[in-house]
Image (cartoon, rainbow over all chains, first blue to last red; front, side):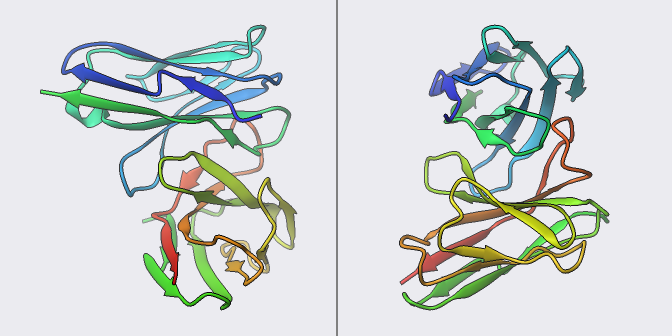
Length: 110
Length: 114
């Protein structure tokens, strides 16, 4: 039931791009993306809704394929501050009851 | 400043004792949530509340209890029935319980049961 994220971990140099994927076995109504630094609270990045609506930070982009039950987060021109663990969370219906994914650890090096 | 506060940041308890974790928000949000996070794992939903005086079980509610008597407060009690309570506990809130609403997280409470 928990969404599966890939890759599990990725190491980048500053300025490189990355894609993080989130795949669910259930039909998706919405997908949320959060970033968490070690020992801290998750921080909101983006929400994608069934039907195409999106809400999030300008420098973050993501896609949502309802048919494939997948979402991808695109990180371009990475900065050191992008380091952390990225989680997707999915809802299967018109509630905000999120089921979080397995997480992707991203490390950006100078 | 509006936000969510959780206290204490670190909590140590002896096995068999009940413990209550505090969560307060001044964002005027209707919905509030409790999550548990184990090392290297994602967040799992314990309980959520869509509105004051109402709450529902999440995926791992056994051994936990909550109350929502005030809009701004959603305390979580970890009871002795919870077999493995040592974890990082995160409280969150959203404007309403809508799939399009972002959740704002508190700083978390790290509970260690000795």
